[in-house]
Image 1 (tube, one colour):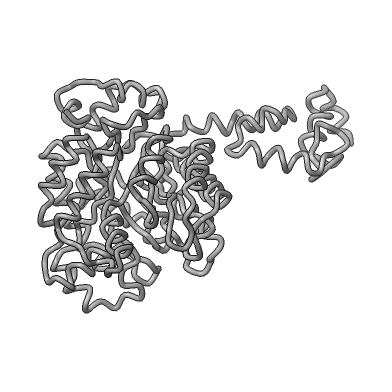
Image 2 (tube, one colour):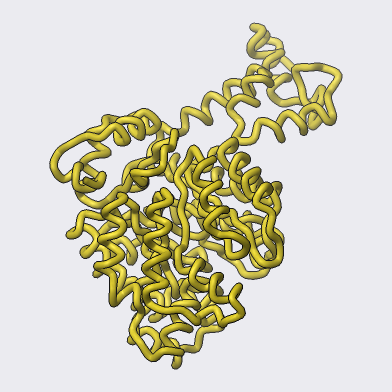
Length: 435
């Protein structure tokens, strides 16, 4: 049985117990949220992972980071290093978005070496295989789609992005749209191109029951892909995006009725003042399924700094209901990310997630309080311990040390906390008042 089916029956699984330890909550709460569909616990029966995570209402905001090869740059050893950096700095999951090389072998090695959840986009395989065989990326059959889903499930993938929300109806709207960026989702564009070339319905939508059958067998969580997510601020919250969400809401019901865990993916590029609206619409139309967002990116003019634009949007989105943030690296829109890009994007998104969690649950602020106490005591080692990136904190501190070890080189003898300590904490309140 799947985690969802066991939760419905009132059973608490070992995975729920492990996830509850991380959340510092009663496993029964996790069971209830999985049972009512507001949370998922992605864990393929064939993937032996150490870090079990629940994604959804009332739990810590989770963070994913994307890795993978491309035709422009293919080095599996570097991708494995990205995986380990991601684990070191607190990623809850990684997605292997490889599109070049021996994809099956790349995926096998990533799953084998991963202690965290692994997600994939099966349709990439079908498109990549066609291209590597000197065909167009949309030259494949319906059976190729389903075979890729089956392959990924058998190999141990914990969650899969399935672009089943694009239908003939949305294709007709796409032809008439005034969008600047028609489709920016790779998976979405592959599906749309296939539909236009073959004049057929989306095979993932038409054969969704077959996808469900495969995912149920291995307890793969379906992540319903947002193939029509906005790729520019101009396109945010338009009829194409909403139309797809309506279809995804229908598919959420299908997943639950079949016993398969499901979450929904979201935008994209969204102005700050529309982010809360997007969270409300998604939760309403998609029956409160966990929401997995890319960013959202809040301005289109910062290439090289999109880890910042997405962290701004991610913090607001998560504080308003998003459950899962996909990290965006500084290299977004420019190139395949390096190991350092992966780290920078992940840390920025972890900051966004933690900032949002403070809003969701004030108890989370205890970490920040401990950092503040360490600062007030000039306890540098404790400060490094509580830092999201202790390595960078140590590097910066040691680079330009102050003569007085209590202080940093920013203020030196004019350190506000040091001055206050000298007068207040040493019992010199009277002296301070006289001066």
